Length: 209
Image 1 (spheres, helix red, strand yellow):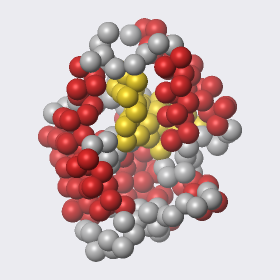
Image 2 (cartoon, helix red, strand yellow):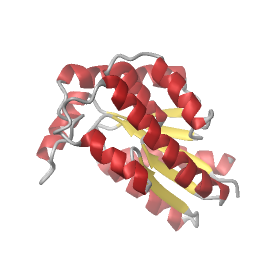
Image 3 (cartoon, rainbow, N blue to C red):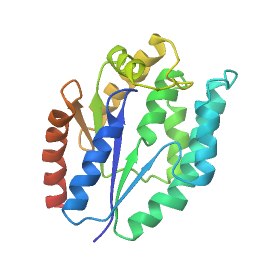
Image 4 (cartoon, one colour):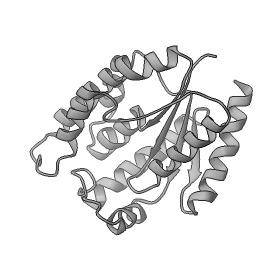
């Protein structure tokens, strides 16, 4: 079987981690071989870059540095993790991919289309076969994050509400631009309700594959 690449996108607190676990269990129960990974991260090198990017003490990172660090982590992740798994016929479930960079750096940091251009070079045009965008307004997502037991807010989560609003608008814009790949899911319901919607789309796509 040819590999299948699925990414999960959404504002902070939208429930991506929970739904990735639900998808993994569902797919494995159906006999699929699954790799769950994340961005930034997924490899030893990329995880070190993640530490730099999300450390709240790194307040002097510029928007351009941030963009290139995310791109560097993605280049390593793609070559060393994602592509080999796809070549083996696995389903790759990735917590964030290029859509996040466009939303966070392109819209949030207001760097514009250069973010898309840089990532086209990094990925050589490789994109997920299917992307789920969990739609939760940013103020609700931040409330969820603050209410999590023991959760320490990272550098991006600590940004002002105006930043998170721009990120959210960036995601909505991408949903309109790429309706064939990005599935817009209302994430305001319970975890089980959200997964029910995801499962319907997922099973249909894999049946048609």
